Image 1 (spheres, rainbow, N blue to C red):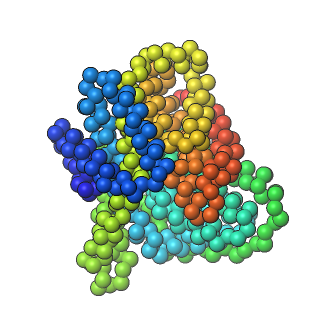
Image 2 (cartoon, helix red, strand yellow):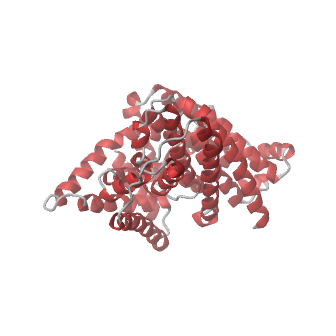
Image 3 (cartoon, rainbow, N blue to C red):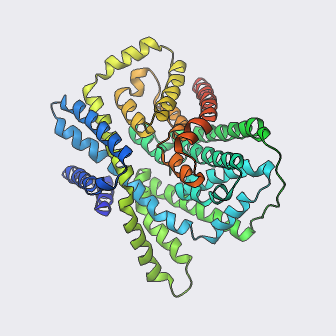
Length: 443
């Protein structure tokens, strides 16, 4: 069923058939119903509440059924992205070159380790997504010193989360480009790289000046260098993935999720087959990968529910709440655009800390308060969204990043989000607000 949904999303991207929209929406609802019993209780409650609020809002519209169907169908592009990423996670774990890169990063001495881990997971994660983060968690898992485990986990979280500022392979960038359709990656991606560098730099300074001084110095270790062969293979692998995506986007005009949906499975199959011993590569490994991916698709049930509920909430609120009235109140309270940028960042961090996923906030805000209603240029709002997205996932006790690191460290997710990451996220939120305001006035 998930495979059919992904296939219909690809078809709709190139041959728009209106009659496929309710079919796709129906399949998505059916998928959720079949998997609902397996979804954890907190996600169930959140999904039901968000969907209920969205349905109440949609009921105020004359065409409420169409509004609901449209909200459900909008989530298919995100389901397609998850489908593409699912194929790539298997070859990542078996690549000798990526394993060599991992050994080099985690073997660095104390003075360089935070930067290597942060920038290493940033580069790998920005293209390989969660699979890149999983590569570098071994050192955190094996670390017995609780203070060191905290610092290493924070290095990985900051490096990985900051990639959402610019990476077109991250769900944050995808959501924001879909929510603000007037934008393209070129409008905010290059500026986002500067924001990501600032986040990682400030996080390193916080670790250096605050956390590292709170414990005795560590014994130096000997780093394991990466061979030229593994280095160029890793660079070639990541470069070919990015290059192929750029070629498809330029020649077809397809969106990034559609591009990844097209190239993800064949790229992963070719990569996976190249890792096997000769004589066992094709068709055995291709079939093995396909079977593993298909078996894993139902495990995406949590993400599907959250994204569908968030989209229903967004379209429901936008159909029930007059945009002009809300914008008038906001503009009266905050007449200055620079103040609105600070307010947006604080709002994101607060709502994420209390448990709302950034996807909910982005979709709801962009529906109720589009950029023009606030007197804000679309790229300024988009850059604010991508700048704070990663910080929001760091402080949220329910984000995928926090939950993943909770499993790795054995520390409750709310401790990671509220105690470990909140100070650096507030610091970085202030820094990116200042940077966005400066960019806005200079451009």
